[in-house]
Length: 304
Image 1 (tube, one colour):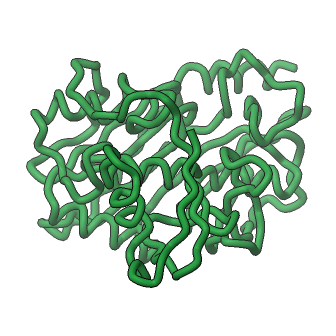
Image 2 (cartoon, helix red, strand yellow):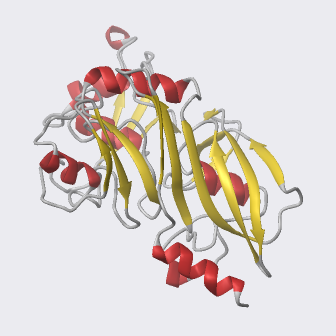
């Protein structure tokens, strides 16, 4: 179902999520926000963020599936908890788990598991579908995430991400050999105008994005690398490495057409996470081991 709404003079300056929740009957603001996040909302044929404020004459298009409105419910799903206190929780997310409910993944997400484990005690700043979620990693990316249990933690952690002071290191296997053993990719990332599920390097409606990489090991057809995020855009490492000609092994979106199916998605793991505790002021750093799927693939390409 598609809605097309033209903004009127009296609606000037209203946030797009509020504007749509007032104009589409039966759809909450948090549900609208999830549609915006998923690229289902465009203004004058361009995708926007939920903070966009409408201008009179704006042509707003909304794509809504026939599915019932999403709701995050507690589910008893095992969690690999690395650290937990009254203000935050650090978890090691497995490959294949979605972080929060969205169209196509209404349940069995990390949020559903956290709601059960924390008995609903998560920061509500990010809405009912993303309680406590400060940053995300893709469904088929494994590794460390910090989730806010209190609002004070959410504000502090979000600010650290904004200021680029949070340590976020990933390990990845990419195709080919990089020209330099160390380097940075500084290229803006925005949503593709051709396929809204894809991101791309573009100057149009994009955000500043920087990824620093170091080559750890080279194999016949692949390289094992470390990536440190300076910014945290959607699919950032996957887009940046593909942009410089070295897509991630197993990536069925940004990689070659012949996909390494045994990996079930990109070979990418969030191995290290560091931040200043919002209350104690202490710097905390956590590291997780490479998961078996990753180690197994490294052993395989090492023996080629």
